[in-house]
Image (cartoon, rainbow, N blue to C red):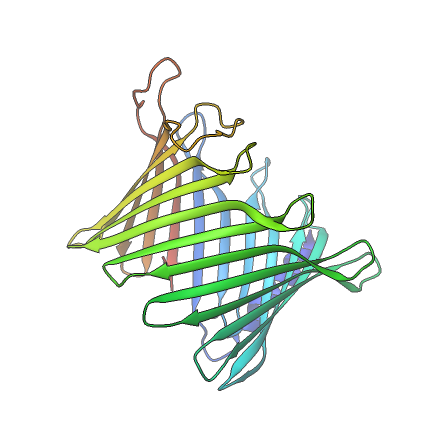
Amino acid sequence: MRTSVLFTSVLLAQAALAQEPKRAEQTTYTYDPSGRRVAAAQTTTVGEEGAGQAQVQTVTDLNGRRVPLEASEETVVSEGPDGRVIEHVVKKFDSQGRITGQEKVRIEESKAGDGTTTVRATVYDRDLNGSFALRERTTTVTAKDPAAIRAETLVERPSVNGRLEQQERRMAVTTGDEKSNPHDATVYRKDQQGQFAPAAREVTQTTREDGKVVANTSEYNTASTGQMALVGQRLSQTVKDAAGRETQLVDVYGQSNPRVVSSGYNKELKLRERQLIERVAAGSQTVETFSVQRPALDSSRLGPAQRISETVCTSDCKK
């Protein structure tokens, strides 16, 4: 563990030398059976995303020690008016602080004259010989016009012969304006005949009015009939008061038996849980609490709220 701790310390120290970068400390607390708050995980971030960032995540083990879970370092390889290239190197550790895996992600962003943007992310895994082998390549092309924003994503993975093959496509369309903007995203995967067919879909209707944001998300999966069927829904309402306190209430609906996919569109969904997220910012600190209410087993009435976690972020925190 000493080696990995030394590595993460050096990583953050190197990032700290670059012209007083932004720094954020985020600690997540959970609660033991007695209701006592216990520090469960911590993330330290130095620098800004897309501009050379280092991040270290640690967790608390059963003995109360902080051990590294993951460390990442971002490097801006090149940057110009037409795009940039960024590389992320991520190292993962076991409970003893030993490296168990290493991943490298190369992100190439480019912009055409008509405003179309292309983002290609290539993921490599480090093998036992220390070499990086290609695992996945994702290419997203986003085009904007006065009516909509359209994004098409192609996912490629190596086949048994080592060649990249198309495995998944994703289509997303966002319309509307600042007050109301529907978002429709569909995932296509290959069927038994090797043809792309709809496998999952998510439709979100977001409205903003008088400081209140309402988002209604419907989730669909392919049923045994081959048609898309409604399997879940999330209704979120977010409000912020004059003091800056933000409260988000999320109702999560699903089928009574989550292991069974409905073959019809009109199957009644049941309220599975109600989430309450509260965010309070004071100075350089932001506190977010997460609580859940769930219905009793013998009725649909929601039980008392149970606080699940509390996340405290200090210094340069993002929502």
